[in-house]
Image 1 (cartoon, rainbow, N blue to C red):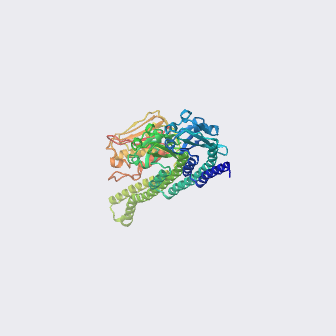
Image 2: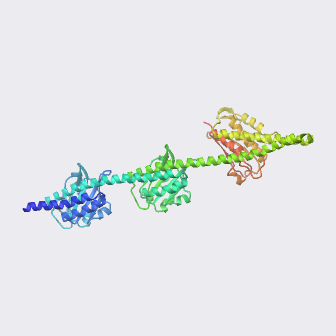
Image 3: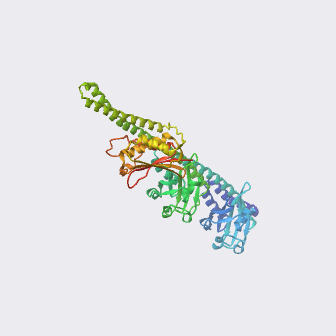
Length: 556
């Protein structure tokens, strides 16, 4: 065999060692590590590195290196078309630098490491540039045509192997993502209680995103604020009851805009929650929790080191958020159903108890009159009849109130607002609700015209006036005004007001002050339900003296 043939055979043997390495690995990191060591050995060089193309930025990013590991450690990025590697990628052909010290190189590490000569070739698959493979020598060296051809042949095989590994990694990531999302879905389906659901899901979400913290804030609609409901790695959010206004800060912007927000550097970002900086969180990603385009809250993750969350991270967290939002909505509906079942059970029990007292009295009166009526004195007979009628009336009122509640719960009350002159309507209601001789002051502009449902007005105001007479003290004031597109009707008395132990449950069904022996405790619950059916509300305004209630009705 001649010298030329021996040289070709040796080149093929050396090239085969690189090809074998390219075919032996599916995982990109292991593939590059083996390829670079073999390439450096085959070319007899001191350094070897691979830079892969980031298509989004059109930059070459140092992915793996031997003898010049700093390229990867420092995340070197070279624009295509500039410097040594950039020219190799742009021109799609090999470039030789005989003297690095006097050449156009952007990467200062090349000179810092003392590299004197370099050879670089493009990594191309199906006509597309994947990146650049380059080698270097710590002594001046003239890379010949054989070196160029050998490195290019090695690069051609390496490019195929890299593309193969990328496809494999993409498939593996897709499989892992499906498994991760399935784990979230399984947990979402397995738990009905909201607390249990969040306790299980948040650690999983943190692990899936490879983050250090994960938190859920849910929307409090009355205040339009996000309230920290559950967290891992940042439990202080929940412990301190963090509340973020929609539109403000990191989470608030996510909820307002209904799209993801990335904070690459928390220290220099607009965040309202001081705990984020106190915990040392450096980077964050948050997405909205949406059901039928309605915001339920926000899900966010964070890292204790700076991290560039990319499009795949956003997509993954959004997929998780969709399932979490549905699970939260499902858990809420379950809790509401349980709560309603409890209310129904309590309602039946209390209603039965409330009806039993007057029913027993009426039955006792009738039984006594039937069995001993002839033996009773006229005075005793009259007293029994009075008690029977009184208790019968009490039972009738309670049944009417229970019927009202049933209609309101079933949304069976038709609200029909019509124009009225308010002063005359309120005078009629007051005359029917308040006995003559009770000091009542009516402070309503005589020409105030409003649009209201008279039945709603009667149910609410008459109840408030009866309560003022029954529990308060004169004088009682009934006033009204129209402001800010709302009609506000106020009933206030001069009594002792509502005790603090009752104030928190004032509008609950069957809520009564201790020792009260009149009334069913349903009146205020019914009054508020009527007010809300009208699109308004009934509120209690604590005062230093007396009780003050305000009916609010919108006026378009």
